[in-house]
Length: 594
Image 1 (cartoon, rainbow, N blue to C red):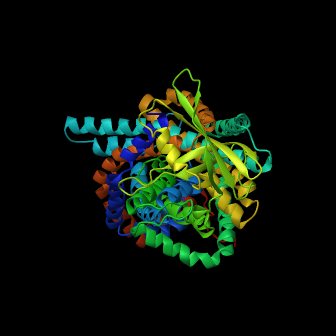
Image 2 (cartoon, rainbow, N blue to C red; image 1 turned 135 degrees about the vertical axis):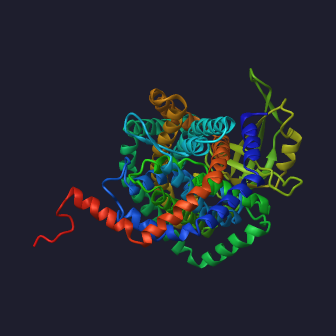
Image 3 (cartoon, rainbow, N blue to C red; image 1 turned 180 degrees about the horizontal axis):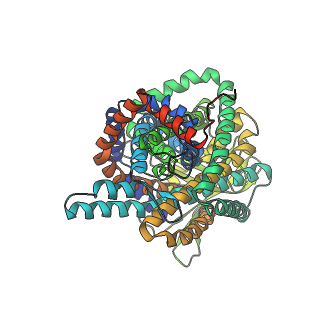
């Protein structure tokens, strides 16, 4: 079993039906306990973000707005561009519906976790406030009671912090840099009419990785204050540009929007039909993919964003929780929806075949020190020779398994092109009993079999934008992907730093930062997306377990504090309190110059 298959099985175990039930069930519970905090977040929360309730006497490192942007910079990233494409490709349009459900419920989950993070935060020797699941698990669950309870709470906290370090390597560096680099590789393929060799592609990826390494290092060395300042400028600009581009594409395909929403709701509860490159999926797959992509995008329940919100300048934990609840709304219900409507509205997920198989040559043995490999040459007649170039990949579908779910794609790398034909190659381990044999593969490559151009993740989204606005996907998406990856990595650098400081102390922070930026290059060097994505998904899913245990036990404390907070808000206590604090610093504050 190779690493790709191992990662696939690993993430399959982590993200299964129980995971979907736990996250949605917890979101429903938190929504009930907080009396629909989602709606208050979109009213009172926006006022807090604007600075109406900023108190100069409050403790913390950054403003509410900067804390939100720092958390959003960790969530609004390639999960919104690439992850949505992966979710729709694997789970169909119905995955979008379940993304909405988890995004809405995630607002309550994020409110609860970020309120707890601010309640139980601590200040280190450098003046940086540290908070997050490991702190509220240890301090909230283990402050009192028998010894076994304190030991159990400490063990859960350590587990979360350990998984947090692992998760930041996958989700925070490798996946982000991998996808950012691939957008520039894709751009080079379109610019170079003769195709791009694998060596040149690798070189481009490493250049992008080096740029990201240097940029991320310069920011995360400055700590949360510099991260907050950079995110406060970068995130709003990125969101506005991306939304405007998406709205333009959607308006161009406005007549398709009703059908898009119909397909989203229909395939959320019924198996999707197999059309073109979109093969169709079972309802279970749509649900799981929707939950996975929403959680990977907004991280509600994973426990990462609370680390950023714990640094906010406030003495009211509930206030910061309300600000945090706005995050999933922006991230999933707005940005991810924009991407989904572009993909579905342009019909990108159901693109037509680019050709069909003409013939398959006999397998040829390849020399290898590690194992015995065979190479199978496939000749394909293409309908449009401009859509395929050397270095790109084609694929055919493998049939659904016994449960009716897709069993994947058979991917062929294009070796050379002649007239209206391309020659692609399939290589596999001849002695690997775990994968399909050459006879099985040859049967899938019978003459006349439809062949599709393989685009995955961010490449698929860029292709969708290009269909609606020529050149936008080609030239803007690589820049957007680079900026989104950069913004995500600077926040994940702080998350990993916080987990490292909890586990090993402040002296371990600098070595962690060096290791963190180094893994950016590892991600860009990876030629395949799926193993990287599976690793990231798996780590995030495991982080959810200790976080949800602690949050579920401590949720009643948040519910009581929420009722008290809104009672005081209704009584006008906060306005008077802030006015007095500002007058104490500036006696002329609010007074007329007359």
